[in-house]
Figure (tube, rainbow, N blue to C red):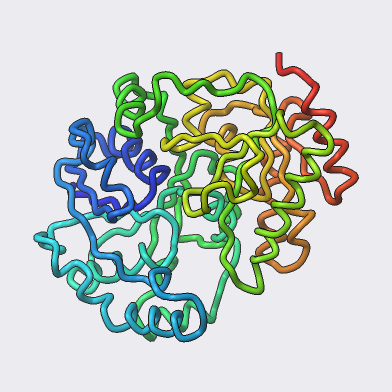
Length: 365
């Protein structure tokens, strides 16, 4: 069987590598990647996992200027160019049996649609890239369905046969055609475990702090729905400072966030590797991880089954909307899997303060 993965982030590439040596170890596995992970692809170790590797052009609305005109230009580009996105790649779309895309953003499913146009028998599977895969299958969007049928002639959820995630029992799935399958974690293979450290340039001397509060930043879109997230993150960091002191705060910035986003007085963790890897290579028992809703903060449990101390402040900032309720529901499911009370979801500032002070001082045995 011939299989092709689509990846554009470090986390996606790690999951694709893991699947290539587990679920698809007896198949011919190839990779479509986007320029954002070019430096990872340049490592010779990557060839152990993909027999052929192809770069894809970037065509999606995110590369256009902000504002209505920018978005319209971006979507017009997608609608008019999706059929030709793989034309610059020297492949025969009809030769593939399976395509795996990470999640369902426009950058990924239009690659699937482009191949499907020339290969109607291609089998679509989705693999985990973050938290969205755990609740998206629980929401049926008929508007999106109609748009996709009109523009692409198909709808990816109707076509998808399987979803690979680390904890299938946490997925809310309303699609009977989609089978839920468990992914192994990267420690399943010693070779994979060691290669990840090389491919993703994990520092040999990182100097990860032994104790403190690590705030995991998110780069929210600058729009009416989510821009409040950027403002609230600043407020939460300042509140944490008043409770534990500036010197006990460490900030891990999102790759798209500007340097010193929250001011130069704070400690920033400068690591070019996927942050989840600290769970592999560092002792994180006495570090408290705080975020609004970053998948990084829950991947310690989902991917590695490590019960790190985590506070999710999502409910303090985003209170309304079906999507926000689904996110909160997922976090509560994860919370229920913890053996100890190390995963907190405060609903207000008072509960956040109590959780910070409680978990900051408690010690993981």
